[in-house]
Amino acid sequence: MRRIWRQCAGCCEKDGTEMKRFQFGLDTVLQYKRQVLDGAQNEYAEAIQRVRQQELREAEARHRSLNQQFRRAEAEGITIADAMGYEMGLRMLEGEIQREESRLHQLQTEAEERRKRMIAARQDTSSLEKLREKKLESYEKELQRQEELRIDELVANTRAVEAGLL
Image 1 (cartoon, rainbow, N blue to C red):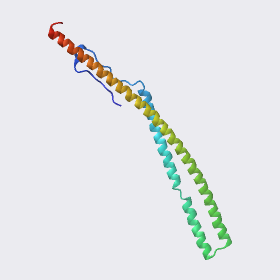
Image 2 (image 1 turned 120 degrees about the vertical axis):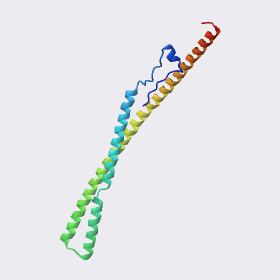
Image 3 (image 1 turned 180 degrees about the horizontal axis):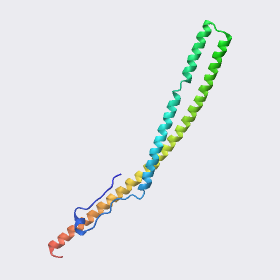
Image 4 (image 1 turned 90 degrees about the horizontal axis):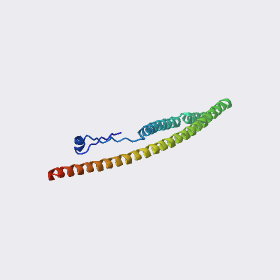
């Protein structure tokens, strides 16, 4: 945030008037919106991090490893009890994979909701910042206009004094 203090080209010092500084009436709202945006961005980053962590689970790797062990043992010849043990282990890992996939889907949905909130917060903040910039531009134009009027008045007064009218 920048604050603008302006004075005209010296005439303000002479006549004792000062320009008012720029104040945006919605600055507190804009600050709040920026805080909301920061929070939404942080929440989205955390949600994405949880998705990535969930994707890196080892259940699928363990399932592949156990399945390879089972296939090797099966090729070498194993008992029915050992085969049933492998099958049961594989089914348990398949269930774990399904639970992890469900959790991953849930986390992805949550991340998408957070992304939408972040976008909405960014749009709110952006619209207020654009409004602030327009108000600031209008303020600066008015300052320029007032400064030009004061300069014109100063020039007119100087000419009047030179002409002996005052």
